[in-house]
Length: 213
Image 1 (cartoon, rainbow, N blue to C red):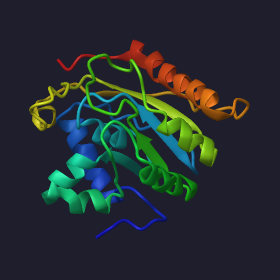
Image 2 (tube, rainbow, N blue to C red):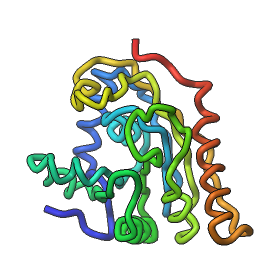
Image 3 (cartoon, rainbow, N blue to C red):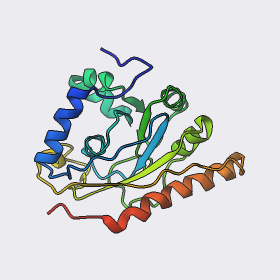
């Protein structure tokens, strides 16, 4: 069953189950951030595969996610679930053109889209660089950017995919203030400037980081 193009993201039941798991096992705070209505783009750091569950459990709206195409294809047993919540597969290292178009349509339809612009979980140098996809979608749709930061979870070691899920942690998600990107600088230079604004917004939340134990 695939998610309809209009409303994207997990339904209330799935979000409720996710909150119970994240708050119970991973000790995520019960505080819930109220996101504004309308088109939104959430962008954050990427530590492990648990991150999408944690940010979804931290906000009051269903989120649609970009996910690595390799996981979407290889995890055939979970593909129905990815489709049900409206996940958008992207090629390794960044979103391809088709995925960007689909993501822009999702945002224009009034949904909240969540992106991890580092391109991979637990990179060698966290937030050293990020992909420009979020800035590009924000420019095309006019949607505000909301930065967030995940901490307190066990990082992906690039071998054991599921370890961060079953290993108990002290998860923490901090959501920052909305950013409305300026359209004054056009072209590639403006896109790069906007990408740096997003990167710095995520990095600025690092002062709230916690450890998993």
